[in-house]
Amino acid sequence: MTNLNQDIKQKLTQLNVFEKLIAVNILVFIIAQVLRFVLNTASSMSWLELPSDFFTFLKQPWSIISYAFVHYDFIHMLFNMLWLYFIGRMFINLFNTKLALNVYFLGAIFGGLVFLLGYALLPDVFSAGHRLVGASGAVRALLIFMCAYMPNMDLRFFTFNIKLKHVGFAIIILDFIGLFGGNAGGNLAHFGGTILGYFYATQLTKGKDIGKGFEGVMDRFANLFKKNPSKLKTVHKNKSKVAGYTKDEFKEFNNQKQIDVILDKISKSGYESLTKEEKELLFRAGK
Image 1: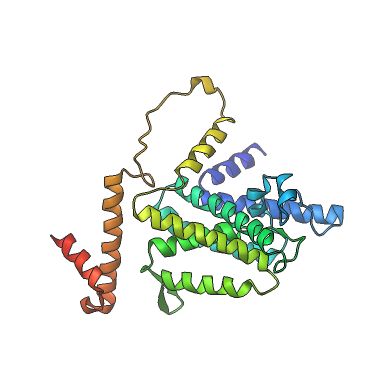
Image 2: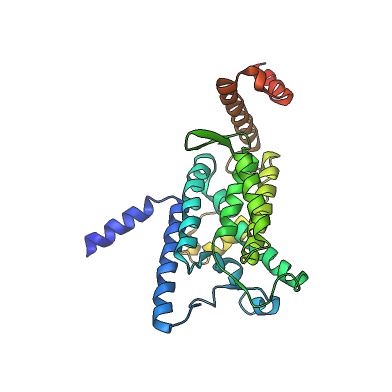
């Protein structure tokens, strides 16, 4: 048994942050199914769900995040976790863990806020009594972040390539259509994640990490659970860093990323396929 526990702990330490989030979601899903069977109720984790009524939400404010870990339907959970796995692999290759968690949890929070706002401002459009569950808003934030940050990156889809920006456009259109269907509240949360992901990415390209404040709050919260806080050392933190880089390093990284995309485009479609802005960027890099 001791060896089994050690093996499990070792495998968990080898997981990246998104794989750990997937593991938590699966664990919560299993617990939810067991409770549904034992309690004989369809909604076995209502204390974690995000209610559409604002005053009910005030009684359980933690639900603005906890709802993103609750899934009752296997297909709903499966597709969210598949998206999270593949997008997460792309994300981790480019950015550090803290930035990944910032986008994910802020996407969940903003998705929940748009859900609450939609039901509060448009009660005649969205019927009361609904509750929000699922990681879709957080996953949307990650997806749209990547689409906005690297819009011209090619994504392999069966036998042909499709640019990330086109994937983003398609997802937004589907979510808009979904506002008029049976999962209108869920699609409100999707739009919240989309807005957060797009704004975060566009600001990051300008060297502004809008999640730094949230990151600081989460760090302070995590420190409450650390052992022997009195023995912690004071370390100078470079506040000018963006996504784990200094501003100069980030600017160089961002320029190199754009050059790589342009060179990839030339190899596939030729130099004449470049836009005027892309040619100018390549010329400046060559100098």
